[in-house]
Length: 345
Ligand SMILES: Nc1ncnc2c1ncn2[C@@H]1O[C@H](COP(=O)(O)OP(=O)(O)OP(=O)(O)O)[C@@H](O)[C@H]1O
Image 1 (tube, rainbow, N blue to C red):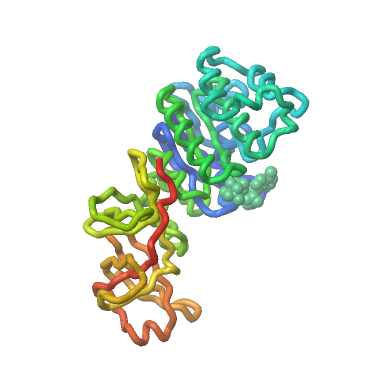
Image 2: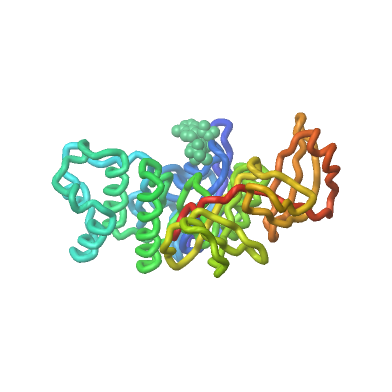
C-alpha cells in the first residue's frame, strides 16, 4: 500500500517519520498543531519533504531522484472546506472529474444522500451537504488513495456515523487506501485498521486503534473508548447491560442493536473511587480495577487504574486520597453513572 519515510522542515516546524507502511485504512490522531494535516499534504504532493521516499505499492511518488506532482498521483483529498465550484450545480461539480461508471456514481449519489441536491448550485449548500458532495466527488474520481482531513466536521453525529459506515464499505470493496484525520476517537476506532498516533512531530506510532487512542487519552485525561459486547443480562427498557471483559457496563441503548462493534466512552473525571462495592448507590456501574500508580500534580491526585487491561488516570482531591490512602497494586471499585452507547457501527 502506501509506505514512506520523510524529513520536512518549514520555519520552526519539523516533521520526521521513520519507515512507515500503512494498512488499507489508517486513522491519524494527535493534538492540535502537531502536524497531521502537514503529513497528509506531504503524502499528497501538496508540499514536498526535504528528504525521504514516498511509494504507493511499487510506484515511487517521491525520492531523491524523482517527484510526482500532486495531479499525477492517483489521489483525492477531502478537507473541512469542500472546495466545490460555487456557481456550478452539484451534478456538474461531480461530473467534471467522474471516472467511475454511471451505475457506481448513481450508487454513491444515492447512498451519500446527495440525490436531491444535484440541481442546486454548490453555493446554496449547507456545510454538511457540501461535505457529502465533496466526498462523492472525491470517490467519483476513482482514487487509489483517499486523504480525509476532518471531512465530517460539519455533519451531526448521526449523519457522520452513517456516512462513515457507507464510506468504509466502499473503500474496502474498491481497495482504496485511506488516511482519516479525526479528533473523534469512536470514528477512528470504527474506521481504522490501525491508527497513526502523532504525539509529537518526531514520535509517530502506528498500532492498534483502541489501544493507542486510550493510551494517549489516558495520559491526556480525556474520554476513554471501550469496545463492549452484548450480554443476556436483563435491564430496564431503554437500557442494556454490555460486557467488558469479565465485567458488565450498563448503557443507554436503542431497542434494536446493529451487528458489529459497540463502543462506549467513559470520562475519568466522572468516576468515583471506592475501596468497597457499594450496595445502596445510584451509580449502576461499579467496576473492579487495579491501582497502577498514584501521583499528585498541582493540587490533584491522579490515580492510574487498569480496567480490564485499559489504563487511565482518575483525578481525585487530596482529601479523598487522605481518606482512601490508595497504593499501587490495590483493588478498587470505579463507580460511574450509566453510559451512552455512542455509535453503533
Ligand atoms: N501554511 C502554513 N504556513 C506555515 N505554517 C503552517 C502552515 N500551516 C500549518 N502551519 C504550522 O505547521 C504546524 C503543523 O500544522 P498542521 O495543520 O499540520 O497541524 P494539525 O495537527 O493538522 O493541527 P489541527 O489538528 O489543529 O488541524 C503548526 O505549527 C502550524 O502552525
